[in-house]
Amino acid sequence: MQNFASVLGDAVALILSGDADLMEIIALSLRVTITAVIVACLIGLPLGAVVGAFRFPGRTLATVLLNSLMGLPPVVVGLIVYLALSASGPLGPLGLLYTPTAMVIAQTILVTPIVAALTRQVIEDLDREYSEQFRSLGVGPVTRIAALLWDARYSLLTVALAGFGRAVAEVGAVIIVGGNINHVTRVMTTTIALETSKGNLELALALGVVLLVIAVLVNAAVMGLRASAARAAYA
Image (tube, rainbow, N blue to C red; front, side, top):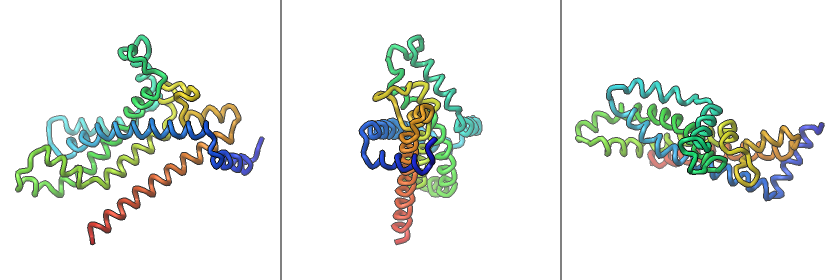
């Protein structure tokens, strides 16, 4: 059994060597995750904004539902998407099972409730502050949602970041619908699980280090952007 320092040294050397397989896995992980987060934001941001800004029958139920769906079990989502995309499922003729598209679908289902629920809270707080101005100016619903989303854009970046963090760390759902096929659907999290079980700890730890670095870089970028926005607001 290798010691931790030896494995970590080999993992860092593997990263610095620019191993082609490693880079391919990282690139596919980022492509799938970023696509899922973009789709989730396109659905979740306006949905959360509508629930947060307007009062309508069933709003409380919608809020409870959004909050509850934030804890969707990944393996259940993976199973449902698998059944839908399998040969006997309603979407089977599309042939999407065991493709990156299936992984994007699973991640989008997991991330959208998170984006929508967090957006609802952000927009509800902001709307409480602006509601008097909207009424006095006679602002319509579409303009109102657009204005709220724009003014909350820096807070919503953090929401998107939360969705990114959830998606990039996902393993249960993507391994069910993606199948962890080498050079096709193998991403960082599924590779870590596979290589650890095979005893290839250098590659597993190298991917773990890359995941941590990505998380730190994304957080730093968002914090830097928010700090720049705050300075511009008070300039």
